[in-house]
Image 1 (spheres, rainbow, N blue to C red):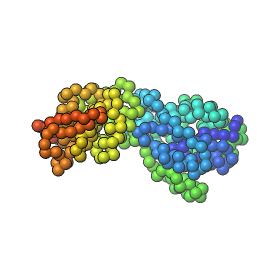
Image 2: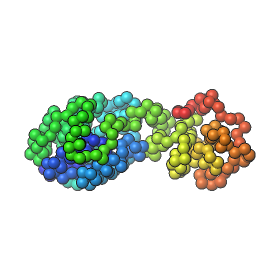
Image 3: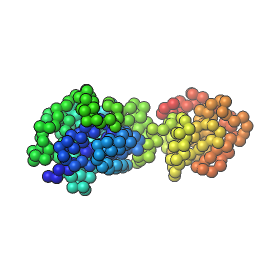
Image 4: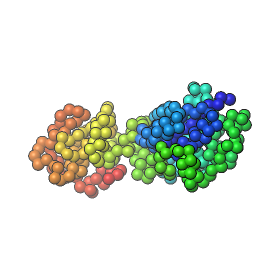
Length: 332
């Protein structure tokens, strides 16, 4: 077996320590970061970790196929829309392919026995290893002495005696070890997946309920703005600040119409069917969320509609909160 491994690097403390433990045994380490456009992990932290460790880092996108894992997980959800076990299986299958492509011998991860209730108990760890196709080739250095020996250990490629017995949710031992190794570029311990956040999970449920084939772009948009489900086929997103207004405009595309006011109000991204009624409702939403002192006093109002000039009258009927509820707002 090659003295070379693929280490899953998330930007977190545990994955950095797991990779460092391999380097301590003179094993070549190739880092792998799996990117989700909605930002479940911190790519910049992963890159900083890899640089600090002195290892190469491959960044791969999970792809739209990952959304099928979220929609219908074989092993169910955690506290929100987080399919933790299925997610790990999907990611480790990608890691296995990458491992084979670079002729590495095994995959390393920073998982700790008992740290996370859904995916890091003994039974789920076994399921993840078997269903990812990495049986015997998935090494968890931080808890290795509490688990069955892997092939790298049995073959003497990795010294089992130099692996650890960490378990549970406490990070005191990891923090002490990071200090001794001089590892500083990692995200704050106990950070979480966005899919566990109830607000994000609620918007994800709405997306899957109304889109048969959502994309990673649709998931990324869930992190931006205020969302209003106006019909089965249409959703409106309003920017909450200047940066979100620019980001929404950057998502303008077929089926994603952007309406940006020339005055100081929120931009709107209309997703799905956009008819005159939808345009009217969007205009009223923009007006409702524009600060009163910023509202123009004269008609017509000036907008950019998908980059082209567009004029509209000041809404005659202001949109108040009861009307927002009628529009089935997802989040206000």
